Image (cartoon, rainbow, N blue to C red; front, side, top):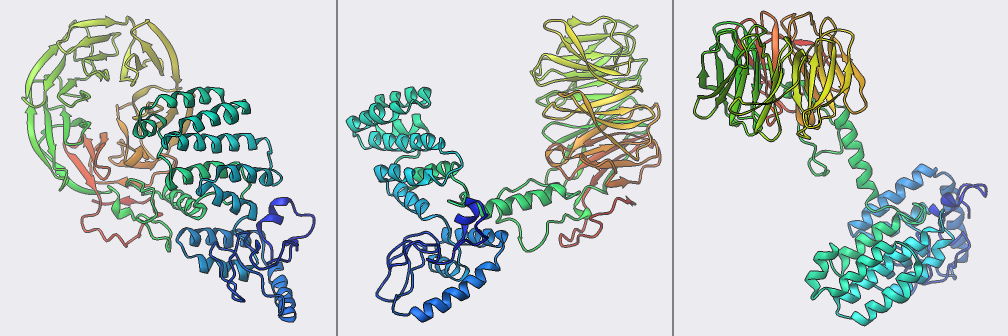
Length: 604
């Protein structure tokens, strides 16, 4: 019978039917409701291949009654219900619960896959390549794109060829290559590669060069997965379809979770499918874990090292303090104090290997300090001219060079000894960043823009144009996004590749003070910024409204830094002379999802 009327397309017609009522043979041992070959034992219909055997002909009255009953049940099944039954059947089959699958298909009137697909599957898994190739002719009529048969045939013959080679049957393999693969006139480049495998001296060499698992269940299962992509799902379900759908659902819930800040486990074993995913706000770095009070004046900057084991803070009190981060307890201890920055320290940059730290001062500072972090020794004190203003710095990814500049028109590239390698005249620099290509330097200037400068070919180009001064900016690890603190406007997110403004984040108070924001959290899903209203604001990257406002500082928060290795650790530096370390709630009940959807402030 046709489950959903004669007007349905072939997919619907193929996906579900009631026993042998669709006109297929109902004799014992034939293909039955789920399309898989069944094996009958006398009058007991037990299938070893997820098939459902037809009832003996002697019970005509019962058969008719059962069929009519099944037809009524079948009509009540919607297409989505049939799909779910097939997904469940496939999952149970993968678990080896074949008798359960037989019963499910018999009661529902559905079949797991088309009988031709079942036959094809069995022949592939048994390595009966001639029969599998013959099966393609039956499948051709069921396919949306019959031309895909050539690609399927190529994949089959490729497996056949490789298995002959592995077995040492070189002549047979050569015959497949010349008489079967080559006449297809498909993917000649791949055929040339395959012919090269004839030179492999042994099986291990072949498997390594072909990146192939060898003859057996693993490689044939992978082959089937590839072949299935050319067949409609009504004929053969995609492999492990139910697990795929469940993984997608879990990933989507995690992506939509405002406070999710841990590594995404791609498996399903680490989650419960019985509850929706929900991270508590108490698991997020919203709580003051530590207040560092060693500075004796305004703290202008803070930055975690690239390996997450150190934090550097710079202050108006002329010192840089390097703190050690205990990766177990997340507590910070004073490691070194670097002194002598007469104008104060308004910017810091770690070298890529964290061996060196560069400190810059405010606008009237013409000097730059390069410190050896481990020894605490000053390696270089650089000053090209007393007229300079060196207020920003960025390391080249090679760790052997850096660029520095300021608003008085200086823009230099130097080595670790402070020797001038290159300079760019007339660029009034506010903030700098070196991209991972090792050639391009991004610089925000006094014309409310960010331009890209290439020191190798001396070219420059406009990338970002704002309507107000760009006080600072930072770039995501992948180099795609830039986060700008814009005077009187707040925090803006730009796509550097497409050169478009992606989002304007709300809530923060930004005047004409230099405030530094940052990307952070796992996968850099979050954005944090200081503010002139004494708060730290945190947003999910996709949401314009803050998900947390952290209170505790008593004056402007100048800078925030998110630990790149410990996603639950955040630091903030303020004019109140303190550095606050933020983490999850100290006594965390992981079952407590209170405040999940709140965006309220958190007293510390």
